[in-house]
Image: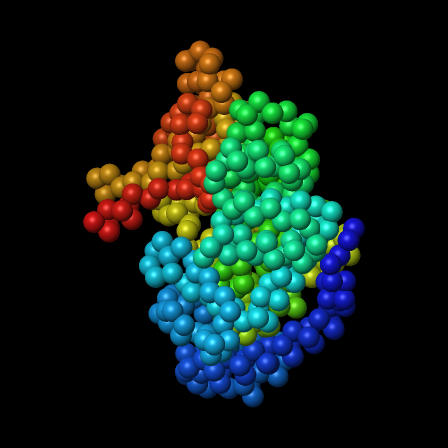
Length: 437
């Protein structure tokens, strides 16, 4: 198995910890003297750059949240003059001001490096044709994969998101071997390929690198079965750098975090205390090589667990489990905590339905209600009404037993739910809509 940067990716962990400590010290100095916000926060805690002598001292530093980025919109957390910023990206800003991220030339080089590692983890090399169906523009997905693909010498097809029929045509005609997009769009493409009438045997596609939204192992199996590829999970956040923070290798036993650039911690989201090794909690990152927008102890809100065991691929970087949810998009319904990924995992164990669903949360007469709309498989949909009712009852009973929560299940015909060419809209929380009115 190829490894892009064997020196760092296979480094002895004691040596890696020394590198992390040196880079952390440099980052703290850079933020203290160049970012007034961080200087103020550290002074409030009675610490300065001299307080950080090794990576073990990281717990003395303050946390950073997405709200901190919004409060300092647009450039308040940049650590270099704007004349040194060569690229600006931003989040969608669906719940307020967008979070703005800036990159120096050094940061772009770092981004290209970690994306080269990501693609190599997936088994890609200079002989591949990488079809990038992530969006280009302010979203970091498209350009992140683009630079990584070029760095490993692959042929990059920058088609961007959408225009599904053209995606299929170019995938077929250009001989794409690697697909990069969201997992929900990968399923959409799989359906569209079947409808196109072109035999799957005529495509050269062999692997996909999918991220930007939560997805379960059951959904992975759906993608691998329908597209006949290896589906690799990748992870990143625009604020941290974009895609390239972590990625699976071909063994698919956790996502290797590029620890020489992003130092991870797992904390209790309530107490903010670092949890013991092997615990599930909120993932926190400190960027230890970024210059434009260095972040200290950034709370991702993603819930996962870290595995420090050596991977069979030979890489020594810590691996994170697939995220089980988020500490801030967890649904609380009549006192029960619910993550959409729990519902998806159950649904994909059942036959007769597709992986397309939508959760609708509402409040009626001051009581929360939960409805699940799920598409019936085309073959099953043509069966008798009694069989459909049996399927509906089975889904409802299984979910209520597992979740401990009453749920209304509505079966809808194939392709009734809106398809997404980006992140799938899995949850509609009408309680939030009512509050905003």
